[in-house]
Structures are given as C-alpha cells and as structure tokens.
Length: 114
Image (cartoon, rainbow, N blue to C red; front, side):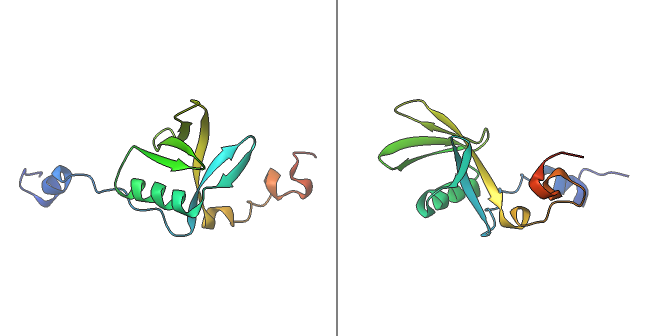
C-alpha cells in the first residue's frame, strides 16, 4: 500500500521542475499583419532566458519601443501604443516535418478540392 514516507509520496511532494529552455532549433516569432516574422537574435535570446527562468512575462526594448511579452497568453504588447500582437515558438523539427499523406497541406496547391 501507499505510505507517506514511500518514494512515490516523496516524489509527489517534490516541487515542479523548472521549465526547460527552448531547444536550439526553435525560435520565437511575432505576427505582423498576417505574416509571422522571427524575432531578432537578441530578442529571441531574451525570450528564451525568460522561459528558462520560469517567468510568465518579460519586458524588452526593440526598435525604439518597449514591449511586454506575456509568455502565458503568447502576446506582445507595445507599452506606448497598447497594440497587441500574437507571438509563438516554432520548432524546426515540426516546421520541417512533411504534411501527413492525404492532408490538405499535402495536396498540390494546398486546397481542399476534390
């Protein structure tokens, strides 16, 4: 049976592990209009460090503006204008994986035609 001093009990009581840093093959992107664009290397490193530290948000400066990036909602907010943009992490292994056979993306032209 279960005992409070058992290994299972100690494991369950252990604090949650810190989030793992993003793999080197991943990158942060921001949605500008309808297109996704990579963050610059400095901004990407800043976001990775925040994730590795378990932070829920991070403030950074880029292109003369101050932004708060909410790493839970995955939103970037310009602190001057209040403009919000979606952010995401793209993993190279996922981005390079071929579309499953028979899926819409695997069809020539990518449409859902017959």
